[in-house]
Image (cartoon, rainbow, N blue to C red; front, side, top):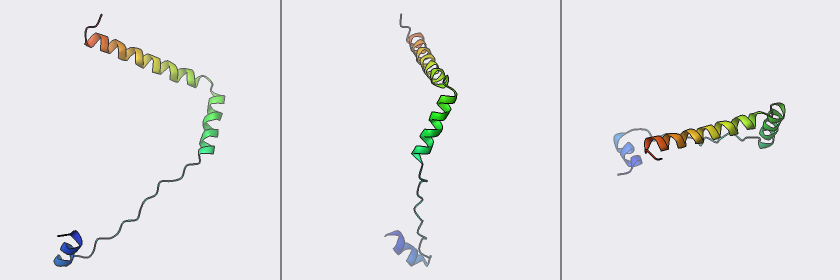
Length: 71
């Protein structure tokens, strides 16, 4: 038995229909301009991110070698 028939049989009001929630629209142009202005203002940021990524990769390799007793 479907939900609508069951609700009718029990005397319950029909279920309220929910409205679709739309995601907010993002202004890509404005976001790109903010990111570019920040990178122009602080040009060291990409080097920090790349350095952190390299350190994480080296740390992961060290962890794998240590845990599996490789080399």
